[in-house]
Length: 546
Image (cartoon, rainbow, N blue to C red; front, side, top):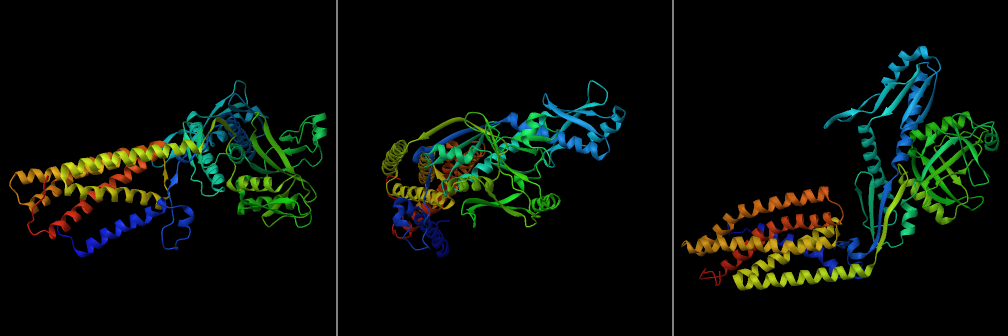
């Protein structure tokens, strides 16, 4: 087992050389690394918020708004199902449920049968169902029904909404460039956002805090917003106010013709005639068909482009009509443009939000803070000192206890750290302060593996075996013990990465990578060094103190 073929030696040296090349960019300034040839690795470790400084936001979803949107959808779905069956009804939302009243109470049995068709199981094929989406009950008076979402369905919808919010925020922040943001769910309805190196929280809040839900609505063909305010608002319509004086307000249909979910692209640009900033948009096929059918049947009538930005910092709803152009001819190409009071900056920001998708609900900032770069530098310095002191203490112990074989262990430990940093750089992982702690712990674990091997070799020597036999037996017998102990640690690291967030994940990454590197260096690199040393010794005698 101490013999290594030429192929194995070349493979081991190749892995070590690759680790050194991928780690080297972290030791030099970025400007120097950028001048290297393309075939040389350029990636450097990204530093986390605790090392580099940056913005920290904890956002909470508006669960009431989420439920209200869902109930409005359930209301339209219920009325639509009854209308399809030829049953007229009116519907309202109150007390967390949809209340339906039939025009003809004699159709109650038929209506109940149609409403129960809306009930579907929730869950998936792998985990099984966990209940139904709705509960349908008869109301207190004849011809009335109550359709209420179940608690299980609400929890599932909230989970999906938080997941969607995380993805939308991630896409918006990715538009800033490679900032290595940490965006994770925290609790049932919160999202943690950490952006290293980005200390302008106002700009960050503008980018990720607004819902940016764009929708296209039919404008009432005969009644203006002013007339509706003076009399009453027709059923199914709402007034969107531009300002407190109601100037530019529009009476629009509550249900949109096309929603922002059908938008696939939005880009800032300039109008060729007026040279003012605009936003060009494009629908997917389904949105293009809906928009095309609508414009074909409403030529000569206006339609409203509505932007819902959710709640602002004061808690007021920020929803407004961006423009209400008149349809001059059918728009069948699935694309168009939005003009309004845009500046170049606002047009670009809004295009990014629309392109990234709308947030499911408004997000409220629960916690906001910035971490200064000086704190990060202090953390790095403290981490470096901890690593240096820990490594020196380990080196002194190994040299004192095992002499030449201790030097072999130190070379393996050095390559261990090089491989970890190289892999993290290649994968684009973020180094955090707990990650540095994981690196220091890896040094101890790597040395621990060599200690077990060397102590086994000593035991075999005391039993009277020859040097080569004792070394081979020491490596072979220690392998199972070390593999078992590292496997249990790896399981703990994977669980921390799966369930943890932020700093915990940073520690789990370095710990897990360190286990793989430790097994490789302790059993392969150290064995190779010992094998090469023995091959060049005539006496084949192990030096003291081993």
